[in-house]
Length: 251
Image (cartoon, rainbow, N blue to C red; front, side, top):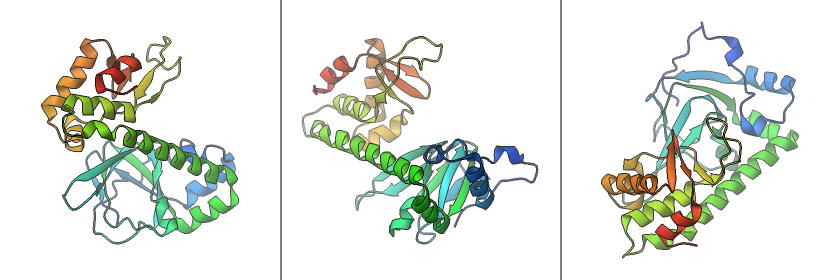
């Protein structure tokens, strides 16, 4: 099911570690090493198609993104619109197959040079039953995702007729943003507020919000001009949440 693997025999074994996978963060080094040995390791170059829709049923493996990033795409309805989700290094996907949920409509593309570790579903299911820390971490991950979707639904009224494209952009940024701790600035200075870790491309936002790329670009540029936000590549730091909520009409 997966695309052409670009791994070479010269790849250093020390890079094949699962230490950075978040849901496995509480496992002992010995357990991580055993899991790594059972994984099928695959590398892909930027823009490689990892697999495409229609290649058949569930993945059969849980896929850990060890380095790089993967973009998942699936159709969201009969109108041909596509939903995109980016899985950054430390994340995973494919575990829903354990619950009997097919991913035959899913396409995955490498956003950067990427290293993946594929663990058979049966082995991951056994791990969930035996290691409470992994199942708890996975539940917490789903809870955060559900909360984010609820927040997005809470701002859905801003897409009603009469709202501007810029307002929809601002509401979407609020839905994507997460709190940023006081010591996470790139230069070490104290930084709080909200942070969008990876700002979607203008085209993606435009398609998602039924507006144009020009409107998206102008809306974000206006936030920067007003000192409400600043670019922190590849993300966006929201310096004044109250002002942003005012612009999109939420409190």
